[in-house]
Length: 147
Ligand SMILES: *[C@@H]1O[C@H](CO)[C@@H](O)[C@H](O)[C@H]1NC(C)=O
Ligand SMILES: *[C@@H]1O[C@H](CO)[C@@H](O)[C@H](O)[C@H]1NC(C)=O
View (cartoon, protein in one colour):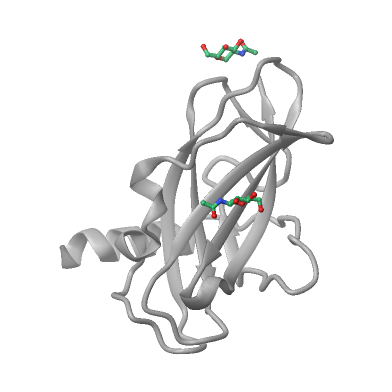
């Protein structure tokens, strides 16, 4: 377990980070986001493949849980998107164990399938991680271009 974690940390640390969109006022922005194979948005991803990501963040409040919610939009439209089961429990995918202290830095890594009805369109995928009391621990959005 220990060696798996350190390999993961080295992997995340040596991958170039990508500038991602903010979710808006009141949503804490990540310290760093890495998407292997993508250092500038939109990230190009073939239909029905997974996008991997790592997000380093520090929840601005103490929390005993992390709920990951991924949504996808195409322009103004919401695409039907189910957050994959393996991603939903954020505490299972971080390099620490919950509960987390306020300001504690963690890295969450995961994969999410990308799917859209059209190629050459840019889908915006929004990753929000909520903590205790429904507060937002971190949120960002990445543009993904289906190829
Ligand atoms: C996920 O986020 C979307 C958009 O903010 C929201 O409509 C939806 O209710 C959230 N789902 C969960 C399970 O929190
Ligand atoms: C992507 O895959 C889904 C599911 O098979 C399909 O409905 C959709 O048309 C595909 N999109 C493209 C651009 O091929």
